Image 1 (cartoon, helix red, strand yellow):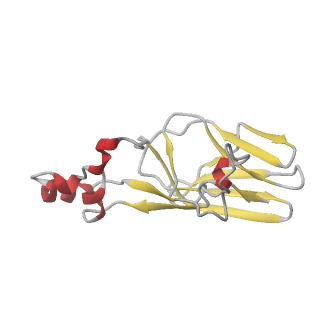
Image 2 (tube, helix red, strand yellow):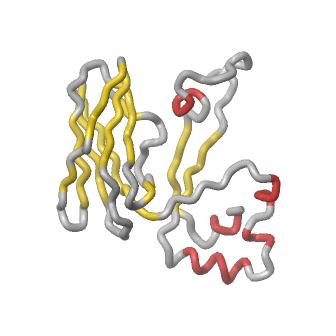
Length: 166
């Protein structure tokens, strides 16, 4: 049993919105618990569905806060734990030509960047796949999360790294 690659420690989900964890399992015996590490509250999934060797765990939305959560998933006699899960506003930036202009280009970039240290901002660093993961003749990967972006990393943004955000 394993989860898709993007489900890593420090992941952020949109607050107040249903969210999913997806993965692969041989047996259909998946169990999951989401735990609020601040107050100890435990949340059971709204549903767990299966399609051949894949599973989808769906949870009801969680209100945004600075609370830290942990996910425990068991199945196929294995246990996966994801730590430092948060809920807040998720903003996606991608593919715009003007994204080459970073915060460092602004006149008051140092002032803006210092504000970031007071916030909880995380970024998802997606590294491009090399040719051995995606062949040139692949037009639509069967599992895009696994085949097009094999390396994901959630990183906390600070005043230094914020300068390079578009």
